[in-house]
Image (cartoon, rainbow over all chains, first blue to last red; front, side, top):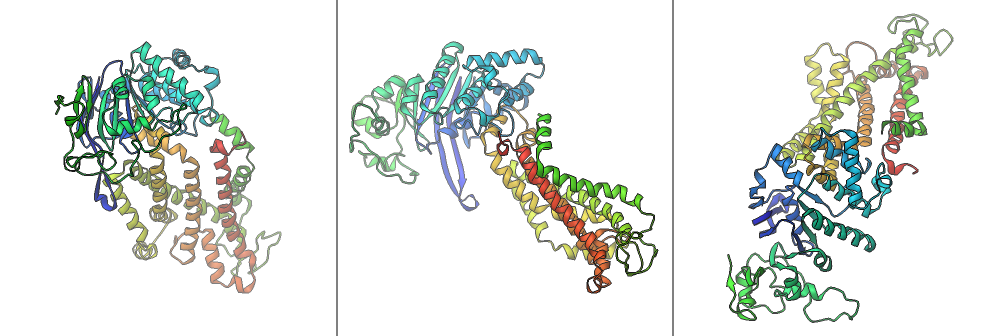
Length: 324
Length: 280
């Protein structure tokens, strides 16, 4: 459904835009129909940038993003509107997603104005109520209220209801639950799972939280410094992580039944992203000499499970096929 | 929605106070000339008389009626304020919105333009204009004030637009397929409404003050009467030294009251526009 082909985003930073910052570096992956893909990475890994590029809020510097085989950067006017009919996003901060001086249900009115100008008032009201019920909200409780009178969970669900009014096929969920408290988190997660099951919705689930990624997804893409370091079926990536970064992430998930153990595979101090070589080599606990000079390609270690690490060629999976 | 604003607007004391003062002077502009039969320029009585039943605000050194001059001078003050302040607000917000929302090279060019207008010495340009135009009207004065006073508005609006466009509700509007002009008008601008009203109010007051300054130094209109011209004549003919307070206090006080009331109106409007500043 959505396909990223060597997508790169370079920001110009510094005085007069003298320095270049590669936020996203030749990222390729695809999201199939009815599939939930988790895009996992720490802050600054470029995961939000990828989501914003898919939503066409910012253009990629190079590479293509295809939706149903069509390059989305070429969409204009009506075609772009049709794109937004089937592709929508929900953002991280529910409070900032609403215009504070308008009532929260204005987001529905905007959808009607822009996409369904011919639908009658009464019919539209029914559709809004239907969408609200679908996300588990009582219409009477949320309609006619200002954003600051509603909770983060309610606001986030209102945004999902807004997307549902459009009959979307693909949803970019950018850290949708990171700002909610624990009790509402699981509700929103379950809601997304339901939408996937009932409507066959494809979701790009952007998160920094491994547990949340695991809960919902079919596949995972692990991002580090704008590069994909590992991707594959969620069980494989979580069950048998190859890349040292993925392992570090997994070992750093706090557990209730165990004391924090130090020293295994930890964080070794962040440095500026290297221009060549493996993006992770400065923090890697087992770097090779070649890691400094040559960037590893994604290599298929088992069906659908790809890892970008020099160690793969020589250790556990010696017979793997090289890709790209 | 509108009724709700009206409800809070009518209950706001600052807004009521500010508006009533401004409306009082506005009313006086229209009704005042009907209350007096004296020609503002006519030499109709004894010179330098303090206020009396015959001449409510006294007379000038030349025996002109100060009240008549005052009520006839209010009109041009409001006219120049509304026209000059309105023009400055319009140009400033338009440039600020485009520069802030579009960004990139358009922003650079508009910024350059703004900076150029800021550093142009206004009075030097005025001298040149005064040399070319023998007869200057209040309209020309207003246009001139409007065309030179907008840069700080443009800067402030640009800065606010920059910060607002980074908010996620603008992204949400964009993925709702809204056009840029619509987003600026319906998402960005309403958030700055109280600010824009404030800008207009400050520009309004600033234009009145500017006009008074121009009139005072003799670069103002060559025809008609205004509060600034009254003060000009008062100072020119030594009203301060002679203790003729009735000559310069009414126009000065009127300018101060109008500008002050406009400011209080703005504070009240801010509370009306922003639901968070309300009690509930």
